[in-house]
Image (cartoon, rainbow, N blue to C red):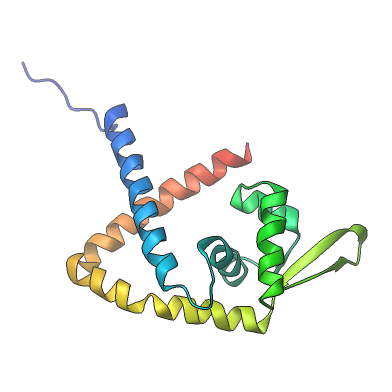
Length: 154
């Protein structure tokens, strides 16, 4: 008598899956940070990337929530970006206590430079990973991200 296989992955398989994602994130972040231009680090690039990908303006609190960091950690990152002229921090016109942050044209240019700096690394990886595999994995990873993103809201 044969056992019917479950279409659901086992807990061990899911742990291994997320462990691999974690290791990939760690390795890719380390490689990426080595090629970031102008003294930019991963945290700073991530904020610039958020502005280019999601919204051109946000409060520090919204950014802290988006990155799941403390308001103090986000304030520190924003101060460093401001000192480099990559973001602008202004009072919010609707509240004296709140601030609004936006990316500057210099920040947009440095973001583009950083993305372009990844080209050799990405081209090298593309030689070892067929595009059709990446596209299949990307669709699945987006589903996982969407699921996890929804769960953090609740």
